Image 1 (spheres, rainbow over the protein chains, first blue to last red):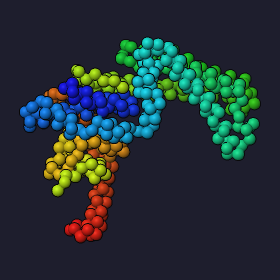
Image 2 (image 1 turned 90 degrees about the vertical axis):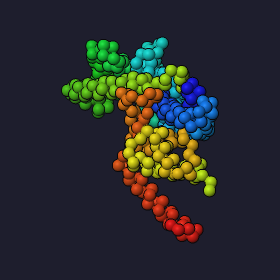
Image 3 (image 1 turned 60 degrees about the horizontal axis):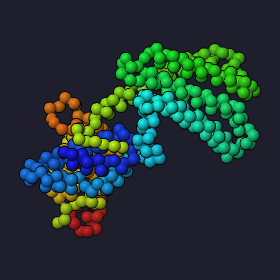
Length: 258
Length: 114
């Protein structure tokens, strides 16, 4: 069976896709190849010949790799072509599930990524407005406001990673108390952005209005809890799916890489 | 006559899979068996090509798939069972109509019976 597994690995390994998608490809192709091999063995009565026939039936490996690659959604293809499935998946798993050797560093990396995305958005949106005919001076986000928002995105990202880690994992590993602490910190940090932005840009009617009626900020904070509960449900789902996918691993002898 | 395979078959593979699933849910190997039986040995399908086609159909919502129940007595790796969705049934009907139109038109030109 090792030959069958190795052949499947030769086909699937070069495909740029997520680990779970590749795992599924491996399992389905191996199931098919095993059935074809059994069929040929019963027909020919010779293991070697049966193996050659079964492999030939599946098709030329490079061609099959191309076909499998074309079936992967475009975004996933681009994402995994850029970062490589191992790097990207490991970073995400390490950050959210604490599986890496340096989970804190991975959490900081993810928070940094969120901050960089916020920066890109704050620069790109005014450019879109300018392209639409608005004056640059009116569209430009002031540096102090930008600094507050980027800093806020970084800390929020870090707190959310902590929260997701607290609600993920097997019962017992997951901790309601830890989740509540991380969640409360995230909500309070969100509420703290209002006065920080009001200081950075006192004339903005949105922040000024929120500062005048703190009730609205409290409502927003309560809404954040709803978001966190939804996030907890999603995290539990993703975690259980990941565990299920691990259970779909190839049989013994089927060593595989990404 | 030469067996039908390669590019000639590739353009119709998804419709053929939908048609085979019309007979009931099936895993990949069973779908291939049904196609082979229906083609009476005249199809030369590279069996691996079935899976990219199934993934495209699943992404389009035309088939749905689930892993076989782990409690099955069968030995070996688990199988993924595919079944036709209402959207897939509609696409199959459209593919049949298109094929009939093609056969009528080209058959008329070639002089072969439609």
